Structure formats: structure tokens, C-alpha cells
Amino acid sequence: MAIERTLSIIKPDGVEKGVIGKVIARFEEQGLKPIAIRLTQLSKADAEGFYAVHKARSFFADLVKFMTSGPVVLMVLEGEGAVAKNREIMGATDPAKAAPGTLRKDFATNIEKNTVHGSDSLENAKVEVSYFFPEVQIHSYQWKK
Ligand code: CMP
View 1 (cartoon, protein in one colour):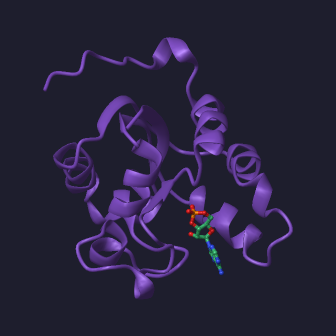
View 2 (view 1 turned 30 degrees about the vertical axis):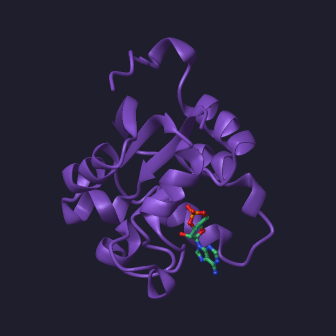
């Protein structure tokens, strides 16, 4: 399988619950390496731009409000089939529907406070990674088997 990059966000609820380390450990244990990490607080413009695809949805205003309510951790994850693997590790968007052992099952509160975001396709991953990280801030390193 090809080595891919995907964008991961630990949302304000995940940071507030103190599970940054646990979330990153799950990624590392399952073969995804963080190759860029930044803790920051998103501006309204950052969040609106990032979630522009959801602009027409009823939950858009609340989503932007929540995503700007506290710090988030932005990460680029790299690994074999990283886009699908990240989504498998996260579980379903709604934690009530997430499989046992997934991040959202274990840490999320509800569909809004669902702890993590992950790119949903390789195409979107490229857009989302470049939205937050210039190439110079991404430090891919040699894979050792
Ligand atoms: P995320 O993967 O970050 O992508 C968009 C987010 O919108 C999603 O996770 C949810 O946290 C949030 N959201 C809030 N309400 C809904 C909803 N009804 N359906 C889908 N996503 C929702």
C-alpha cells in the first residue's frame, strides 16, 4: 500500500479532556507517524475556511463556534494507507455509532464534540494538509521496518 499523508485535528474537547497523548499513542501504535504537529487556537476565519464544504449545513455555525472555543492540535500523519487508517482509528463521526476501541467511541461526547477530525479522501487530505502546514514545516522521516 502507498505511503500517504492525512490531516488530523484533536478538537477542543479532546484537548480539554487531556487525551492528546492517548490520541497520538493510538496513531503511533497503529503505524501512523506524526510528521508535523502544532497546538493552536483557530480563528473564526480559519474554521470557516477549513469547513467551507459544510457552509450550507444547519450545524455549520455551531461547528465553527465549537472549533474556535479552545485550543486544538493540528497534525499531519504519514503511513501506509494513512487516510483510511486514520478514519478506522477514529471511528464513525457520531460516537454513538462508533465501533469499540475507536477514538470517538472511547473519548467523544457527541457528534459535535467528537474529539478528532480526519481527512475523508486522499484528495481532501492534500487540501487540508496544505491549509494548515506549508511543506517546510513537514518533516517526513525514513521508514524503518
Ligand atoms: P468532522 O469530521 O470534523 O467533519 C465535520 C464535523 O461537523 C463533524 O466532524 C462533526 O463534528 C460536525 N457535525 C456536527 N453535527 C453534524 C451532523 N449532524 N452531521 C455530520 N457532522 C456533524
